[in-house]
Length: 269
Image: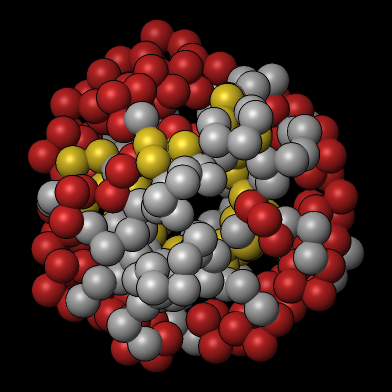
């Protein structure tokens, strides 16, 4: 894989991990989660990219939590990176956000619903940062080659693709594991977004549900198929999280999961 600043343990043979809270809720919480992730992944020799959204632009309801302020949240992500010497990733939603977020983080993430937005992909590419494009719930893995081409033709070869399931009816998602090798055919690292693949959108309450009990199942299958990385949102107390608590992994359960996944990876390799 291309070089990502501060990414360690890349010669361990393990998958890499994008992990952190859904949204940056505050500095203390972000640093607490990052410290736990850093200690754990160093011990297990798993490359870590810390994840946190500085703003949640795609919400069902107007009164849903969106963020604590863009610059404030981005500065917290920067502090996480500097304190624990780990790269960071965050979502962007509009073209003007690309340069702003690039000043603070190492990887710019394109949300699944926006993966066909040409101007957004070009703006992200032109920052020179790594661009992680989430596959739309409405697309096949093979169709993502066009998103990759948009970034590459804008002068940036540093592309990651991430699967997060496909829409199944109105209120469920399913994972088609054929998407992993299909996206790897583009010669890019491919990640399985485990927790978002277990969402149950379009609930009558306007709050997305989830099936976190199946996190281990989806993660094991992705590693067995050959995914290069995993994306897992985690929080000390998902029930109190301000965003996506219904499908996040409790932070205390991550070590046991990673140990199992490392064994799967070793068996596959």
